[in-house]
Amino acid sequence: MTASERVMITGASGFIGSHIVQFFLKKRISVIAVDHREPGYNVPGTGGFKFLKTNLNRTTGTELIIRKYKPVCIIHHASNLVDVELSIRYPGKAFADIQMTVCLANLGRKYGMKHFIYASSANVYGSPETEPITENFSVDPMSPYGITKASVESFLTLFSVTYRIPCTIFRYFNVYGPHQTLHTRAAIPSFVTGILKGRRIEVRGGDQTRDFVYVGDVARANYLAFRKKAGGIINIGGGKPISINSLVALIAGMTGIKPDVNYIPRGSTDSVRSWADIKKAGKLLGWKPQVSIERGMKKTIAYFRELA
Image (cartoon, helix red, strand yellow):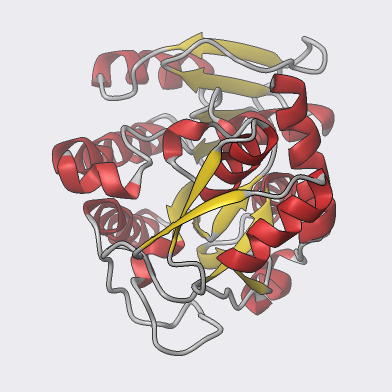
């Protein structure tokens, strides 16, 4: 494992992180994969891959890893809490991500890191009244989860200027695809598994729009950012909004199963609309989504069928 292109990926056993690990390994990039859980995915080959089970909230263990492997880039997707609603009940868990990320970035700098990539979220925008949403929109988070992401963004922006280390901040919109779990209460895995199993699915509102982006496209965005060392805040979305009602209809059509839907009021933390302006990603990274919602849902439904 050569140090010239060694990348550390945190949250490597998670939904997005596992796809990034696989993408980088296919590109023959040496990967240090870090998570507090065991790897729950098949890694293509063994060359240039090292998995380390550790809790990144513990500074000593984190420093031992970075000091030993000296990654040139850290791609940070680990989080103590990824659920917006749960962050309202347990804000301390969400806010712990701030200290974790500050520690990780500073230790990376101490041992020669040249680039930091951070998984932020469109939740920092709150519920804008106009669309599509550009990176210049005001930040107005509606939950501790969003506040945490916005706080880390502010730190990394200052960190980048102060230490002259490029920091790529990805504001992900609604990422979906294989490896996603029900623990996040995300719409697509909940709807797909519920419909496949013939259970009643719960739809909050239904008219609100979301911008879904396939996880493979997200992994590719991370690779392009690594290659180009592009700094700054970048939206990553599908670039096309779809209503939740239309999403349910799409899944029903692809599965051939008529869903039993229970409609409930939209939650206070739910934004009314979400539509990413992704021009900046195209300009800085040469990135645009390659997987349509139809093709991505086909892959996602096939994945959940195998689990059923």
